[in-house]
Image 1 (cartoon, rainbow, N blue to C red):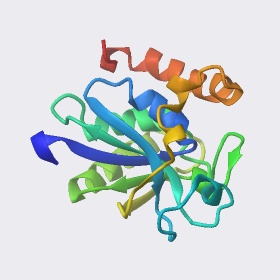
Image 2 (image 1 turned 120 degrees about the vertical axis):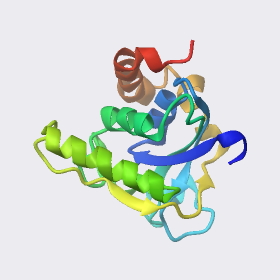
Image 3 (image 1 turned 60 degrees about the vertical axis):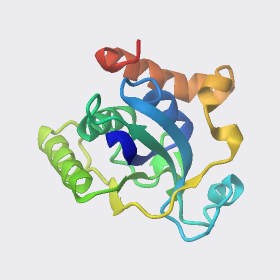
Image 4 (image 1 turned 180 degrees about the vertical axis):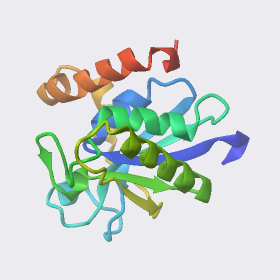
Length: 180
């Protein structure tokens, strides 16, 4: 990427939750909700919801590694979702909600493996981490109404019940990493 920017693509349940957290971090320049890891070209949200495409809901994060590292992004990622539940996050069930890291370089793959190994050794979770690690395939941006969803719909019931608590948790734990 130009100007030493990098891309990270992560799946950890509903992309509204991930986007709402990552957009607030210093060093994150852009977060786009979308789809990755399936077999359908240009999938739609409706197709994703019916699990017809194999895609996961993801966020593609453009970040400045001089300000926030890929490892720091993963620390946030593993704080705001449960990486031990296969194809599910809370009440959201289906392969589109799987935990996945779509790495864009060998360095990202190595860092992700190290972070997962450290988390596993720490014993934070009683169940094994099931986060999929795959080289990043084609990314498809989600429909416009999914972009900045939480910012645009803070009083929508799902946002109030699911997204807002994750944002609050991230703000509390990563206060020093937030944009001013």
